[in-house]
Amino acid sequence: LAALENGFGYWVKVSEAFDPNGMVLTGDEPLAALTGAPSQHANPNFMLINGTSDLTHAAGEVIEVMNAADEVVAVLSILEGGYVMTTALYGDDAATAQIEGLALNEVLHFEYHGQRADQDLTYSGQMDVKQLALTFGRESLLLSAYPNPFKGSCRIEFEVPSAGNVALEITDLMGRTLDVIWNGTQAEGPQTVLWTGSDLASGSYTVRLLVDGVEHASSRIIRQ
Image 1 (cartoon, rainbow, N blue to C red):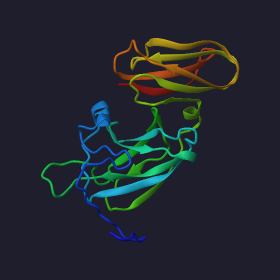
Image 2: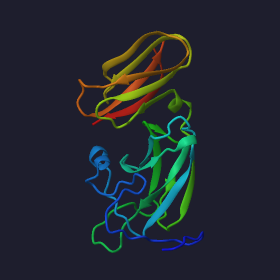
Image 3: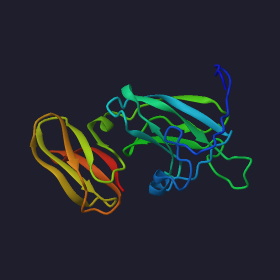
Image 4: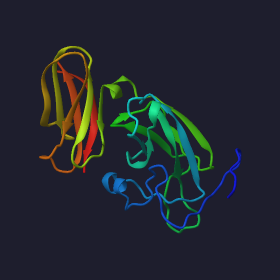
């Protein structure tokens, strides 16, 4: 292939498996094992997505693409400036007997650390390109964790909206407090703490930011 021209679609077959922009390729991928994401099989039934987000602080992290059952079907890498890397979403491959991938007209949504964007997407599978403009809102800027999922430790960044007694808590899915990372008087402004979660089993947890006993932000965090 010597040249690529605008307005033409290209299907490239490779001899060795690779990871196209963070796509979940099979049920054996680490992300699929962690989240239960359905199998994705590269085939000509696909669409491409890219665009922008208000996550200008989150370069190097990912946005999860979720189906109606809250399963992760793809991840979108966040670039500098909040731009979303071009990523493929795949539907059913007509050349195989099994049913895999996304269904035509399936509605998808986008999440960043448990915070849902205000834009949804309908899967078309027509090799078209859909440009996104994802807005997650102020809450996502107040609290973030990287890397997420994590194994050893993760960096939790949070912004104190006003001076007061600040608490940073880890809770389980039932809302029970399992760990208090930070608790004390703190001035307004950005803060960073390192958390290992070594006493907790692998799984999904919630980190909560409270100021004077009032929750200001929360985010999902996953320990592998």
